[in-house]
Image 1 (cartoon, rainbow, N blue to C red):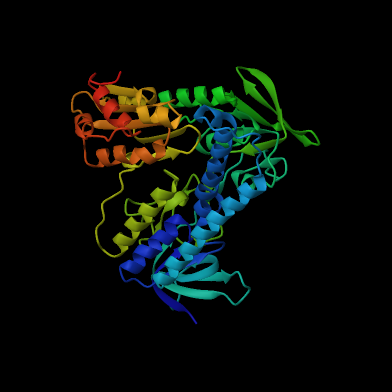
Image 2: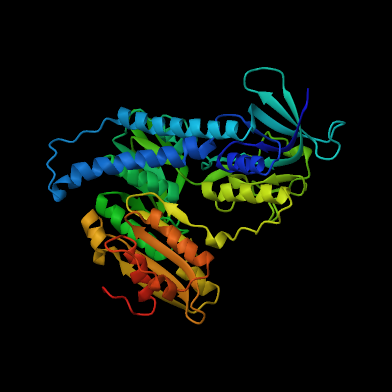
Length: 475
């Protein structure tokens, strides 16, 4: 028998389940269709497990290489990678149980299976229906929604010719399941995910080489951040090849691991390691969900939406990685909330993506909000820049990590903050102050007038804000 719903959400990842919670809060009868596990990529194959591994890598590296700096004598430090993986899985399982509990609390129906959009039917002549192929083999469920949200997420992309076999060539999905660490690894791609893995594996003691097509790593970040990240990771022993075009047809795998060539400055260079990790972005999951039964437009692999997240079919919305843009969990969540508020008729504000904070959880961490200095100049702004190092921050010295800086970019005429870029200890926890400042249209003066407690890492924000007008105290 068909079930009627106000909202049916295809995909129970971060965007999907948050949308479902807000939908239930607003009194809408809601269902989620999830083919795997609630929480999606972020919880099971991305944000959470990778950060758990990064934390273990940080503790291992600090204990092994820096404990003596703090007057702590440890003796021989060894790594139990099996226990590392157990800890990671324990965190994932705990959070997964929490999401399941939230579904029960909100009386949200969860269908475990693959959902496909069908055309209009006698049951639903306008909105169409959703057929759910149940995982348990039972007869397909038929759902009749007034509105649909597509939140099917994304999967790791690879390069033509670089087939992921899970043994020699991995994506991040396979890398998270490694039972033992390799002695060496080639990472193809020096973007956010590639750099996080490079940092993590280096801290675990793996010999890491990063091969990046662009002329710098993390090319979407401010050039000063890229330069500092490169310097600090090189200092730790990570090797880099930039402006390097990987030649997939030269890939060889065997008993000795992986060998591949890359074209650099017109010459072919050979790279070898035990394993290879391909980290070249993510592609949207738009297949096998019934888009062909709709008028939804897909361009360059992503679903096209309005600011309300409506597709060309007004009753069908799409959010998260499947629409491209900033493929971040916190973005998907807010897109989901905005879509539900629009369905309810609450006229929500459109999301300003320039105000979204972006984080890199490497060691050192990096974080940013707003535009880069280069982008600001391209947009015609005459800029003024304040930059302040963690080396002059007492808490950073106490903490034992004083590399890095905070950079604030402001418009010289209006004094508006255009962007804030950070690299150093715990900056992923500090970026929200900058994000709030930009949402509230604060100026560097207002940040500087905020009395930052001493000693804290946050003092670097106040000093960088003062530095915009050449008034930093401790420089």
